Length: 141
Length: 256
Ligand SMILES: [Zn+2]
Image (cartoon, each protein chain N blue to C red):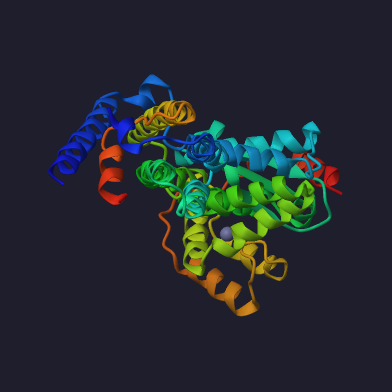
């Protein structure tokens, strides 16, 4: 499918593209309590890979794009949690429902990121639903 | 572009769908949680830290009469006795305060200065009124939460917390709230057949200690006492004495 468009991919390209996803994974783990770290880390990695080949750029953009909704959702969850902890608002079923939903999304994101990291390492492209499409739109050859 | 839009719509729909589905469950009931659980736990925690620096008096001569007065007050005013936790702290300082977790701390130094049980009830009544009127609510708990976290982070002792929370409580109580507590406390005295004007006497007697609020000056206590004297109370018979003279004597003796 997608992978043919990228032509021959060098070993170091695979490594760098895969690195973007690993980076975003690490960032998710460190950044869980402070979601901004997440976005910043992936953003920095994107800037670093900007001068790379199409394959590297495409994957680093997909890694970045996938972080944006995650950042927004985790941020809401983070501040909501802080508000509850400091008694500005009360614990509610709505909070728990949101907590579960956002966590499910985090798991989905985690699985997709691992899949991307593995397939880029093999020189293939794992295109996410929606984010792959957006990346195609943003990332020019 | 169209494809992005279509996929975006579907993604948002799936997300909202899952959120909507999880919203259908009453998680609070399923997990047996109360909405205020976080505040309650933090208050408990703050109290645990705070109570470490309290030298609680456990002698019957002190606890029994205080419990008796407390019970009388609660019964006469429809307050759940079990919901207020009263602790006597052995220290020469003259003070009493209500704090997180519906705890009420009275210093032996204050009891020692009292002329009679009605004055003791006036102090207790004023503090219980703060609790009952919801003055020691979320504001205090929020600050307590922040301080507990700060103290845990810095690994500081509990003695400080005691002071910090004490200050916070008094600082967060406005003049209006103090007046409300005075009036409510006087009503408590009246309902338990004690002289409500003892509230005024007590306000004046202890003005220099600032027990009824952090910053009291002479003018202020005078005004507060006058406000109590202007209140109208229905006639409810001869005022009584709850504790026997010997019990009161022993209580004061034990506080020395
Ligand atoms: Zn007060």
